[in-house]
Image 1 (spheres, rainbow, N blue to C red):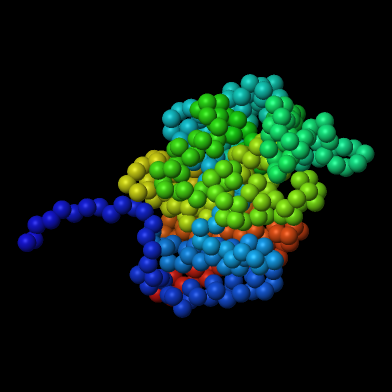
Image 2 (image 1 turned 45 degrees about the vertical axis):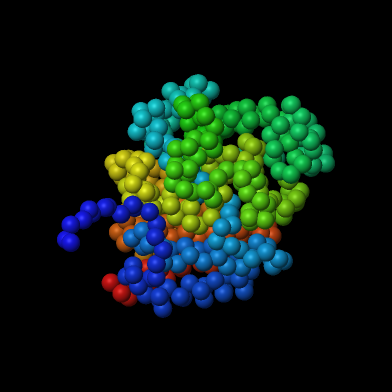
Length: 416
């Protein structure tokens, strides 16, 4: 009696009641009323919300249905198209790893890393500038428009087939295959694209097309395989993946949009982002699917300075280096890859109630995740607000995702 061995707890997410984590259940239940409003006003057919504090999951609910037709209720295990959350859950952790392993430097220029950018107008762009959205890159390029027939407006047979062939082997969607050489055209478009004349902040997807190429060159592996091997598999993030139809039944994947402008079908199991689709579903900027629980695992890894489940994935100093604004004097709120709280009160990147050390990202399909080291809170909101079409902006206009963030904060403050 009195003898024993003290075993340090594995730093994994646990599940408990809010009070165990110092949060008011009553205050947190306001989120349920927000969900009622979201569904009533058809801001999205359904979604998932997860809240964790100090490693304890205190709210984890799925709500609504896969579509407005209300045939399939959302389950906690269902996976959503994460859109731009891909940037911080796939590309950024791999860039962190590559930087630790000295495969790249934050001060590497594009001309140094990728031969095709030498002697281009992007030759001297630094990785640090691109990650901070300070690289004067255009925000995006609608590559798919160049593959349409100029007369009919339909997808050109020069670029597409309805059946896979050795040449037409990039699967863009169901029964739609792009010519394999078009990937080079995409990268040439980026190389040749004009730079913005004025310096300053401009959110851009193009840098993440470039990062995908850089990482795959350095590791000689496709990006989807890299993140699976380096992070998701050992994290137990089995519901986080690119190309979800290769792993999950279709009814476990929440559809996104009834696309009548490019793929001419319900986009279901294929990435919503057109550019990522044209890369075969694996983009540095989009393409990742997951449920809220697995998004929370990655965010908890960042929150715990790079470790999870007793395993160190990244060094604490690497996390801190990336969770820092380098161009704040230029009015750039972003860290390296991570979004940060707004510097301009008129911008609604967060509720305005989180600490300056907090970080996260939002996604076009109606996704959002944020972590705050000051309070130990991880918040995940997943939805398919682009159903039935991307013109469904109710969720965005209402700032509902950041209002829920405020609810979470208020629930903590009531107890502590």
